[in-house]
Image 1 (cartoon, rainbow, N blue to C red):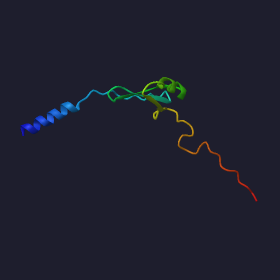
Image 2 (image 1 turned 60 degrees about the horizontal axis):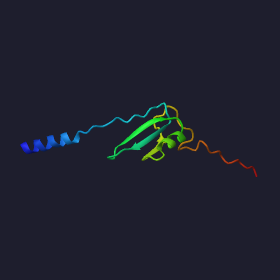
Image 3 (image 1 turned 60 degrees about the vertical axis):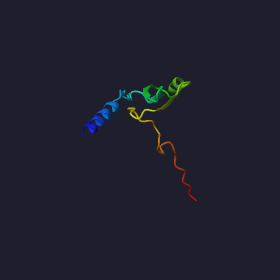
Image 4 (image 1 turned 90 degrees about the vertical axis):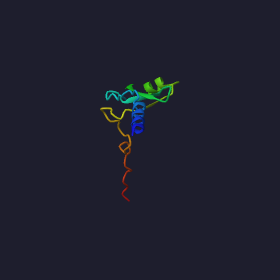
Length: 91
C-alpha cells in the first residue's frame, strides 16, 4: 500500500508543470503562433492585418492564423456568402 501511495505521489509531483495561459485578444483579427525551444508554443493575438502577422513570422518557427475569438466575424469564411447565384434564363 505504501508503494502505491509513493508512486501516486511521485506521478502527481511530476505531472505538475508550469504552464502559461493562452490569450486570444478579441480586439485583433490575427494571431501569431510561435514555437519555442523544447516544443512549447505561445500565441500572440496583436495583429490587425494578415501581412503584418506574416512579416513578424518571417524567419521564425511561427505561423499566422485567424483569431477564433475576434469580436467581428470575417466575411465569407467557410460559407457561400461571396458567391452569386447563376442568372436565370428564360427560354
